Length: 298
Length: 286
Image (cartoon, rainbow over all chains, first blue to last red; front, side, top):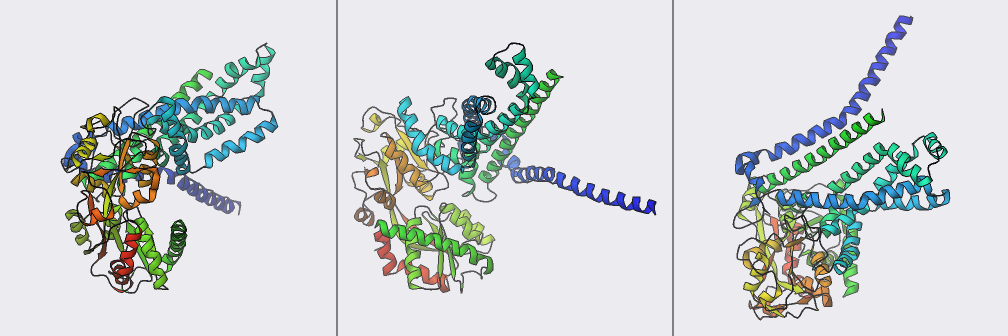
């Protein structure tokens, strides 16, 4: 009888295990399917007009002369906006998290926290509209530009969207640093500022790096807001005061019109693949940083 | 005018809402839409105001028939017609031969109805001293041969060139007829919507952009409309052909329209429909 019962339990356990494994594998399956779908739609481009076409210096897909599908301007555009947005968002995000977790009194925290979470919930098209109407004209007069529709405007708009992510996750990380670290540091005579920057923040660094990476992830993939404010001119530039065209905006702007199965259609899938690789590399880099950091701690 | 427009928009919202629900229960019934009570119209952003005004009047006359109007660009509308997700496609450019081929491969026979004409207005900031450009100068500006206003008879200031996205029918029309089929310069800023062009031009004193004439008139004093080749952009000049940048606006249906879809197309071509064309700042056929 006991053997029978044990057998039943083993079956039950197995069923649950299979179920859980299945649920976990769904994510992997979806990622693999997305890669496969992208690859399938993009593949015929390699035969006609050939992958070399992607190395051209211009992106000019609608033309009576010659269609050119150079990815360079789109890649530099995405990179430029992402890097600028990160430079803007990280100091604000990390300092905000330090303030909320270490300096702010409870009522202050109770006041700030909902606003930061609210910022995370604002739809990107609304933030984009804000960028177009409010930020762009101010940047234009501040820097004496010809037009406010430049990479920097896009970066500021994106930083607005990344800051809540960075603040919320960094704050959790800083809070989870054991209280004993802080007590030990203060007992050894370190000031509060020294304790924060020399002890607590380094101890929470893995969480902060993860927060920044997630923030960058949002920035790289963001489409609508950036499409509204960067001007979308496919220039190869490193200047924050020039218009740029990001990969996401290109896909969003052109996929609706493109003739199904045309070279232009395939090229857009190549843009998608490059974008995927972008986030892939970003994630791997984040893991590396984390692994290295953990090694030091051990 | 303003009251009427708000009415049109709220009506549109109601219709879209109703269509979203009704769409669940009623399937599409064959090509041409024999007894459809919901008509889908999709396509050109230039024609969105026009199509929703038509839809509003049409629904007043034909109780029980609902129309849903969506924009997205002429190419989007034609793709929707080919894929069978719209009954009528509104397009501000002619359908391309490739698109006709694709449609035929899917058993769709696009039929063209020219319903109005539209002038493309060249807009600049009201503070700019420029009043007049030639089509040749426009070509130079948009292909990047001229990058400073002093190259086209203006003061010494860099030109901010604005265009629609490449999914726009206006983009392709402008490229074909003004740029003489040459490529746009890489530095041309591509705006995802006409409203973005108006917005940027109204903020930037050295910007130039192009929008549908109807749209420019509705924007009022926010932008200044230039003369092209010395001809003012207005209805009379588009009609008699003296204004150089004008084009026909089309509706496309799958095959010969039937039932309510036919009623709608007839309505647009009829006296009332053409009166709405005039009201909206476009140019009638006659």
